[in-house]
Length: 117
Ligand code: AMP
Image (cartoon, rainbow, N blue to C red; front, side):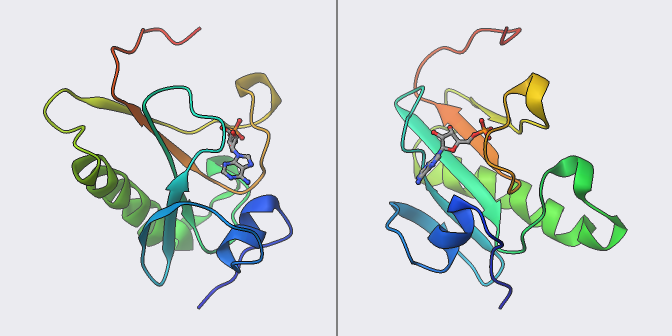
């Protein structure tokens, strides 16, 4: 099993700090965002410490696919499928990325504005 790097999410992967985990496989972990922006706000992360989509390489293709499949599974679990939901990933400072361990935000449970601003 691959362990996370030196970010807060690495600590969550290694179970050094608590998180409300909602989904877990050998390679993927999903847990509730500590500062939710909607009734459902779950972060889906690879256990491999990739900084962001921009840092992903060709050999990460399979895990990137697994993240999207996991995001859809989490959304189903959370009852978001009928109404719809958003999956988003922030890359770098202008997008507001604050944790440099790749994560998909699964957000739903209320109407979502587009464009996000
Ligand atoms: P981003 O701005 O895309 O990098 O998103 C980072 C997200 O991680 C934010 O929505 C934070 O609220 C969330 N976050 C930071 N620390 C924790 C934590 N310990 N447990 C759960 N979510 C966290």
